[in-house]
Length: 134
Image 1 (cartoon, rainbow, N blue to C red):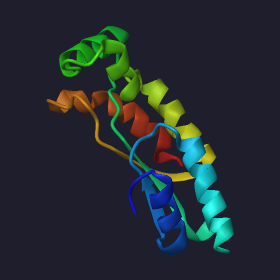
Image 2 (cartoon, rainbow, N blue to C red):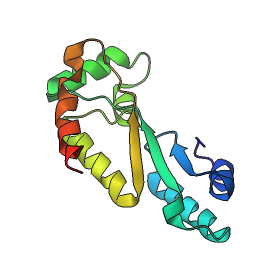
Image 3 (cartoon, rainbow, N blue to C red):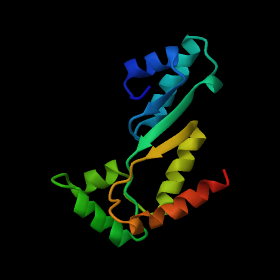
Image 4 (cartoon, rainbow, N blue to C red):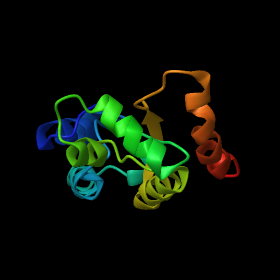
């Protein structure tokens, strides 16, 4: 089941195998609701998987991150767009994904902003390499 409202989380914990959170923001609160919902229906947390859909913006240099934000933000304010998409360097995203895993997230599905050429994938090599051993 995908979503993040309390109603969706309740439905998922009652009868689904897992929940895909529709954004990476507010994970801690959603996971509290998941644990509470599983407990209320007597389900083992190990029988339920939480994943996240993330729409990150990533590049290998700060100046390129800023340029990509500017190129893709449309009419949205620069800071709001950058925050919504966690615009940053590979290390930023590695840290975010490790923190999600530490909270209990089993998978992160990424739909990166700004993939326009094969060279746009270069910064992702560092991210995927960081998790290749896990």
